Amino acid sequence: MYTIHGALGSPYSMKMRALMRYRRITHIWQHGAHAQQLAAEKVKAPVIPVIEYPDGSFHNDSTPVLYDLEERHRERSVVPPDPAQAFIAHLLEDFADEWLTKAMFGYRWLEEVDQIQMSRWLSFDAMKGGRLEQNQGMAEHFRGRQVGRMGMVGCTRENFPLIEASTRRVLQALENHVANEHWLFGSRPSLAEFGIYGQISQLGVDPTAQEMMRKDFPYAFRWLLHIDDASGTEGEWGEADAPFKPIVKNLLAEVGRVYGPFLLANAKAAELGEKTFRIEVDGMSYEQGTFKYQVKCLTDLRSRYTALDTNARARVDQILEENNCLEFLQ
Image (cartoon, rainbow, N blue to C red; front, side):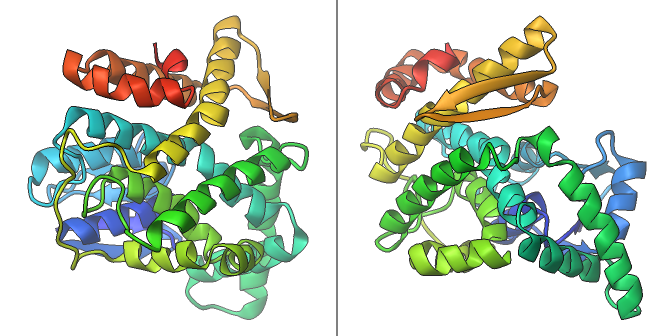
């Protein structure tokens, strides 16, 4: 029995809950203020969700946990057996975790209407009751803390035009795809879908973002509920020699457009010891603080690419080059 200690307002918590539901891994869902306390006491990086294993150990960082579960539970894997598909799925999951998350921060904390509503909801989730005055007092404290972090994570008003344009292209790709078929690599979900779902699950709840999704991307909005519990889904992986679906190409185009330049600029700034970095895409600028973790992400992506055998690399090189992804991976 695993226990997910998380939060409804945490994209990574929702990602892991949906993944474990699909994989039919027996677990308990525990959400509330205790999750942050466990994160501070039981794991190295104080972030949620914290996954409590059957042996009593505690783990977080959703992607390493995802792969560890692959080793421990073979049934209903979310990693395609074809190395080329597996690499592309991992790249898209990484893109979701590290770039799409900025949309959640921006929509949630830039505008006052969202700040007020979401801070109160998140406080309510943590307290699960208590006096209204106490709940709203905690909400104001939490709101101030999150708004104060916006510059650090790159979700400023100056940056948001690029973040929003990028997010809308991802949502349009989903909208065009899910009305006909749900999955990216066959008729079953991969880690890519769960990574994307985790981030967009918050856009399907937060006031301004939900209104936007309902109006402009109604099928992508409804798709979120399908991913939330796909435990009844049965399906097969796509053939290894089958062409990648159009949605995969569209998502990779966004990786090449924004995420590759983002990773390269961050890595260069880290190498030079600079505290911030800046990119410009489609005439829109983006600037944020340098993050060591995203240097690690780039290194990991390059290692995975280098480890591909000749046949797999030949298959991925064409689609990566077509979408401006090959250069930053080499």
